[in-house]
Length: 369
Image (cartoon, helix red, strand yellow):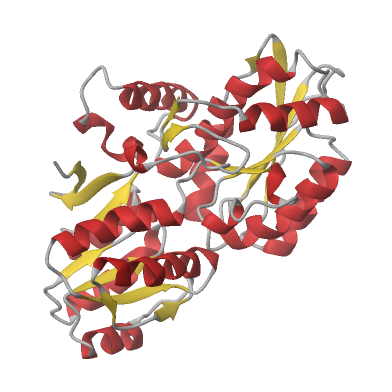
């Protein structure tokens, strides 16, 4: 898919790479639809979007990124939806000295800071922030042992790295490290191995509809303990597919998911309402959290672009460098994903104020108060 309009030299070109097809399509499809809702002008300059599908494949992601920086000469890259696709794209952005804002979740995209990650930013909260918040809740509940099942890619392994590091500091012992592929149709073996350790609770690190499978398998085998998920499950599809089996699932997630439970004048609710209005106008349906990732990326650029324009014209090396610098200076910007304040050492920009405790209750995502 390509969305492009012939542009003048002064137009600001935004290259977008999402996983619109393949195993990551549950994330990439709503992001594809978001493109039509994005701002057409920032700082008095026209914005031109070139959006490509990486098919949930890292090789295709690299090809798309190279095409965007070489052929389309974009001023900024956004993408991809998946961590395994994003990671090699960082090299392309670094080589081209073009800022990239990732839509994926893993902490490794922006940490530890080095010359490559200097050009990378991320709107999805880091694994360590969300993992620490949910593990504190689990420890407070009285659980002592925790089973683990996660997807066998950068998202799941990123979470396992943080959970295994943080759990012992909170008095929690991990009893398993079971993995499965996003495209798997059964996790019976993994579920049985977890159940054999009789954990007080189970932590599932997955995203989108594939996250239903482990919880379903555990409930079908009469596991009655608490099950915790990650912010990657915050979609209506997760609830529709999981039904009764995902009732009671608890996770730490973004304000977007529970904005209706916040006060009417809350800044997080305001930014959510802006997205919903624009997305519904463009698509005739409501957005989900993955759509919010792309919307938030442009919200960051909306803050950074006006100042970058004072330094150089779009389409130049100088403008791309100025845009990177201005993204690094973002301060106290409310996004659907959290309250963002970037710095030279932090290209995610969130703290625990951005982690909300959420529960699946009555077929809805509700804020745990």
